[in-house]
Length: 261
Image: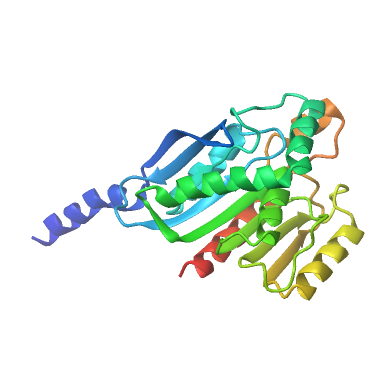
């Protein structure tokens, strides 16, 4: 009898430890523009769970942001990789990426509506507890999630990976609802010490609950394995840092676990 019990437990283990991640294309819209997202979750887990928005780099909604959504799904979240550019646009060259990102930054009211449209889609998904939602972003996306936080969007927490810190609309005291985790490369030439100092001062004066971590030797886009190739191809200060990537993801995991416990 004892042997049969052991066998039964072993047969059940793959079901318990191997998340079955489902990825779904999802179309939604804002101001008449079709937005193309990607939603990932573990469909073998029946209970509602926290949702996490994932905002792409300035290259647009590509395979990298979808990979991060699937990684979050394996951790037990439902993740929606959203589309800030519309129609799933992607850039192949920094000039094009800069144009797309610049258009978003020039109209932050429209950017907020697109972000809110994705947030609404995530909240109504049957796997999501609509009262438990966070957002993470990379590079351009890191800057976007920080801007949405400054605007007082109803998020429990926000994580920025090597995101832009400067803003023309600083956070106001009492407006920011989310806890912040900012993960930056100490060797990132695109984020200056002056910008870091100004960001910390801004958040402190606004009474924001934030944590800022700098990774020694890490350059811009340190979480993206394609950063070395892209940096060399386009002569940009990008570099993948596997240690900083692993450490920052682990810090994010603990942050989300504490947020939603």
